[in-house]
Image (cartoon, rainbow over all chains, first blue to last red; front, side, top):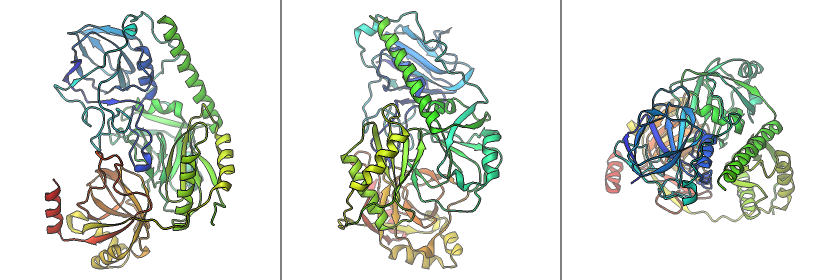
Length: 320
Length: 232
């Protein structure tokens, strides 16, 4: 008895930060498309960063809150409301049993994360609560939430429940979800196989997200990218944010539900700190790519982790 | 005793490196990959997270907070001189039944035509070979097989299919493989097996493992259908 689904929304699934340790057996990582937002949502309700939450996509669900709980909603702004009243994102919120949580217009971004203090009471599969949709395993019975599903929430630490403070995340850490962002990348292993013109095109033109885009990958359309001569690649591992280009010349960004290995040439790789931006883009939106060095990418990674660490410490200090 | 004489390390992402041990798919490179993977698993470096071995590469994911790209490169390069390669053959031998062509193998005719062969010749060549499972990847339990005759090679589809049925047997370039779950993909599909390659309920969810040797056995549509019925 915790959260009853009255209406599932477009695509609501249970996700944590991913299923690691089994990629060698071909088991994909899955996990949140915007891991940053899920981590913050968890920290705000006193959970471990890697706890599972609900990943809510574009049109949010209608949920009946069946017991008093502390929640937080972080990510794109999908106009969350409790009993018809707008609620703020990026902060912990006390909700009472009997309340109804629903979502409205998608104002910015397209995915948002609901974390509940105590975390989701669901069996781990291979060490993770993430949903692997295509294989039908993990999360809530291996599938997206449906009407009448009841998601159970663990009983949290009693200390956490007393601190639904009137504080929230500093605006400097809250991402801006531009609809035409510039995405930072490092060169892909096979970038040198592309023609000079195509490499120039890749860094100077816009690419649009097509409707054939999902948790597995975003298919982009724009100026065609060509190899300088044909070559059939030997399959090897790929990662979250790998940009590969099949022979038709249209790049695909591999995302949370990507396969573990791939055989299309990799032109570039999105840096870790910019991955959440992709998960917040909708079909028809456009992006541009900008090259950075791996040293810069790692510097930004460390900077981001330090910011999250500071937030974590700030929250635990306020709970004293 | 063989050793790893050549190693190239490059960044896959800001938290992973690809270590290339060779440039062609063969038994020697397979053994190098297995040896390096095994060594890393037994001697993980500070910050190492996960390893994905492939045909000629080993990809290592790591935590950039604990170790930088430059440091990882240096660690790997130093490591390879300590690695011994096992030349013993300890393979399991497994038979995989396949119903070739028709609606279960919609690209069989394309593969035949591309190579100037008849459909029967493609089936004969594909099912006569012995295939080494080089690695599991792309999807849970998906075996990347080596040893396919070049006579039936065919390029990947220029635009991948959005859905490929479970059990589909395919060809892409010089590689052949079997799809254990429904997934998008660019391989040319030549047949289908009723066997379950991915068993999520098991401790080791992949039926096949790196190092297995398999043979494909042609079966009729009737045999395929009755096998599928039995396993429902």
